[in-house]
Length: 491
Length: 118
Image (cartoon, rainbow over all chains, first blue to last red; front, side, top):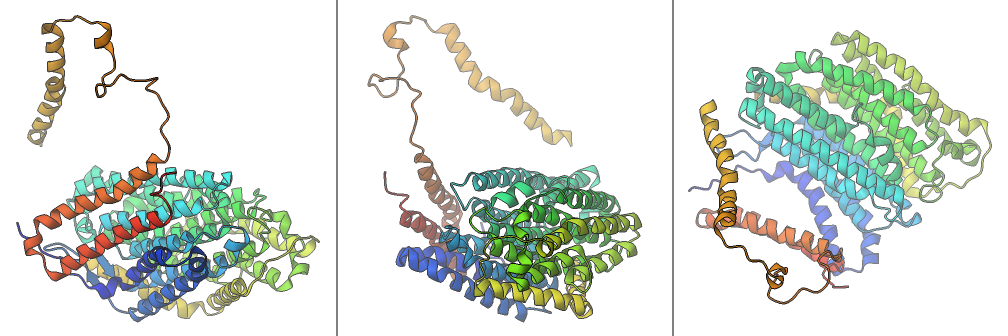
């Protein structure tokens, strides 16, 4: 028996290792330091780890590497501009989550030292999602992403809502993972490999087995990104989980799901595009309609933002459906997720400032009179709501513009029409928050600490920049998308 | 294609027969003389006390979880031990790191007081 070590280039996975290592370090610190001091230093340590990983990631922009190549097989990990761009999104998500958590957790009595550790572990899984070049690694990354999130959702134990949230998320997540793995198994049966280049080569001759595999993986991804009709868990989980965890999940887990979905579907299953594009387009349309229509009747801001996040998954799915027949599909999806990151985390930051106690102050009625209590925060919230609706000059408008253009280019005119109509519908519930803030009087204190205000200021700035200068940023996403697809198509 | 599955079919047929046959043969051939002592539940020779449907402490699940750490460790260390002679410095380093990460998990559980019996 001969043992051959796979070719490994540590430099490529260093950002992931830094983030995961930071989590492991936090776990170790508890042995040597008093718990209070660990809690005190954990946010700082998390920021340092994220900053180091960010610098490393930025340095890898424009380069394409593969690593973890087993003897006589294709590499397990690929790092191209696509993965680098997504890593930037994930690291920024982590950064803003830390900023909005620092003061919130002690305030609501949830300051458990595991929080930052689990967040870092989940982030490392998200980063691997974009870098995976093998279905097995996609699954591994998916689990590394999900399992810490199950625990985070139940962080405010023994609060029943939080435990319900964790249980629902865990069971539905486990089911969807099982379906996803079944899909991988069927794809392996049809193509004889789990490596994406080999899947690409064999999938068109795979027949019904390959199609069943594609369908089951679509269901698995649908659960992770909360696309209808696999969205049932989202409102309950988002409502029950602590708000900072909801903010983290609504961006991180969703973008993580789309990261792997884009790579697997657009590249490896690209040759089956004519079969899966109609399915994804229909799912996108259902998601848009359900997300936007059901959000109207939600009295709770966290449930409203949950349905809003379902709706935004629909817009990104539009771009996914467009990405086979339009060169702009993948870049539109990347731009949309980049804009969504800032807008959504900004809106959640203000929801956190308005949350008086754990689970109190999260109803829409609590936003009455916010403009009188804090004019600047109300202005920021109004701006985020405009961005989520898609009104210029905001990042949300630019994102929707690129997505609709790609959809039209791909010839999915009916889907673009559904997208535009549901966008108009979404105006009703987003602008109602603005209406409540400015037209009513209301009581309630706001918890504004420097860290949270920094997060709000930075997200407003980023949304504004993406709204005013979308062209320059779109060029960057275009480079990210093109390079990613070239490498994949070339195998 | 079906030739590959013949073994599976054979296995499906044989699998219930192998454990089933001794039980049936035992019933048919063996003498059957029950009495009170013979009907008792046998565990380790000592007479049982009370009902067997007792509640176990839920804390046992944590032991099961911690046990999984060692279980996984053992499963992954076996192939490393088998290939030890041909491994380079890098592979040894990776193994040490792997064991260290598992130990980290155990140390965390320990620091949380999981190993204390309450």
